[in-house]
Length: 220
Image (tube, rainbow, N blue to C red):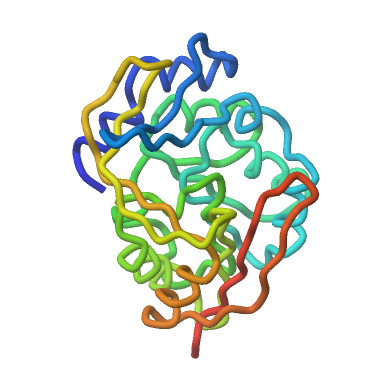
């Protein structure tokens, strides 16, 4: 993760939106070509919904929520008695997660982390497969974090895309961060890259709300 990406997710509009999840104007990722990805802060800062619960039911062992945001998944897993740690580069997100009763730490997935190689499940939800703009590098890093039978649960794009972009966080049409790398991948592209980094696809599923997920299992 680059210094620009750290600063982007610590920008005042994003950090403030973690506390007030209906920012006006709304936040999104945008690039110079007109592409945009809405940041659904209202949902991200709410409680786990039915689509989230399809992910939670598939978690095994100790869970690492990468890019935990406001902590809704950490909160839900904690309530189920599942050991879970959230990590996020935004200190406001970490504070919010802890205030919801979860355990979280500030940092990047690419930083040294507790218990590397011993996590049962890792999560990349809400577009977080895009972190760093290089899915293969991210998949390689997460493979080193889970144990030999660990799983990775990924939320993927609905379309069969495999894109690398240079984006900024925008408030409405106004840029509020520096440029940083981001990626978007669909299930097919994710599977193609995962195989190269020590994963095998275990399952694909979609929620009633139109969200799409892939479960990857570590190759022994």
